[in-house]
Length: 165
Image (cartoon, rainbow, N blue to C red):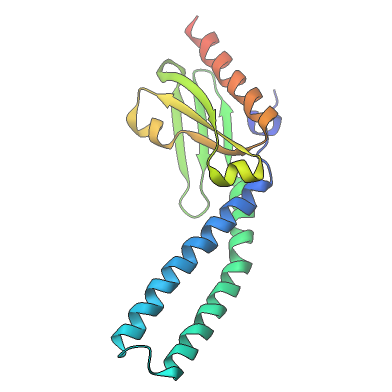
């Protein structure tokens, strides 16, 4: 039988979304650090510090532009989900992988949604509502095209329904 991940693949657009979020977060952190360092060194009057901080910021941003897409490409490739005999399995993460197992009996619903970036990229997320608080918090599959998201939602609900009978 074909794995659920192969039948309902994650869109490559997720790489763009995750990279954009990483770069945005990186720039925010960098700005906080640079402002903190400049404040600690006595203010913005020392132009050599400002130039050094700007150069460091540009260098780190360029590095992030190279590393983030590669990291998220491999993250997408390692993202796994499948229906087993009596549970849904979701495995995600590259450096610190998480495995989420949701027994069909605990599945309370499956919803399709989008956040702001998803709506721009026209991708969707699936959230699996579960009676288990830990699994419910982590139980989502991101970066799906609309038809794929709808098909995956149906497959999960049918798997859960078939198990309960």
